[in-house]
Image (cartoon, rainbow, N blue to C red; front, side):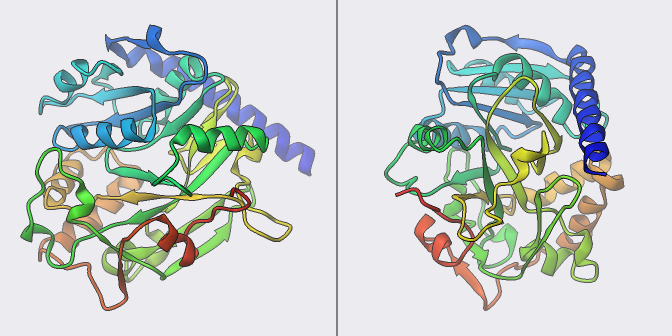
Amino acid sequence: MRLAQTYRLRLRRKRFRLRAYRKSRELVSAVNRTGQIKPGDVLSFTTQRNERIRLPYFLRYYRDMGVNHFFFVDNDSDDGSLEFLKDQPDVSVWSTQGSYKRSRFGVDWLNYLQLKYAHGHWSLVVDPDEFLVYPFCDTRPIQALTDWLDASSIKSFSAMLLDMYPKGPLNDVPYHEGQDPMEIASWFDSGNYTIERNKRFGNLWIQGGPRARVFFADRPERAPALNKIPLVKWHRNYAYASSSHMLLPRGLNQVYDEWGGEKASGCLLHAKFLNTFPQKAREELERKQHYANSHEYRAYAAGLQENPDLWCKWSEKYINWRQLEILGLMSKGNWA
């Protein structure tokens, strides 16, 4: 039975890689600076559409962290995002008018770019509203983390998606270009999470947080997944199977310790809930390019009509990564 499952997953991985090659025909190079990439560089990969207001801080955050080169797929933006990205000296960007939904929500496009450019590099897959926090990130660059992972023969690093939100209605405080979004969305749920193991792929499946309790209160099993594996020592034979939730080969998904103790992990501070979100949710609902007939954005559109306050009496205000470790949301494992 196990051999048969392994064989089926191997075939599935080959299909994902073939899809990536086919979908690469939809990508048009806007600017290609990949000749600047050096051995050992940490690379970042992102799909975006109309995120111009977020991009300056996103790039500054990850540049300060030590990311060396950024890959973007711009999915038919009309807000100046593409023009802004083309002017950045450490960015390579491809544009496409292809269907986000039919590219498996951008996974096929990024799988192709990683297949072509990321082999042998540590690859970070993040959205423009996701900010990686890892052990000692306040004093150590990301290369310190990847060096330790290399020395420990660890090929993938997990990070729980932690939804951040303001205290008070979303529309009360406007977000400005270049601003740290956590100055506004500085609160999170310290509990209210469920975890189970996906037997087929071997990854953990995490749900909960403010989206589950506010937008999916009557059907929490349909709340968005919060488990991610954003940082991987990439090999051209790898492929993401579903966003950055899980990969193939399935061994890359085993980012937890089955024999006691804890493996090192991080968090992705998810700054979705700003005053810009209601308009974004309406736009995405109209486009109908998201998972399961956009059921997630249907829930957002319904819940956002009353300008909700996601804060509750159990909310915690974010301080630093050590706070998240104390709360059990991430771990430094045996990295000292």
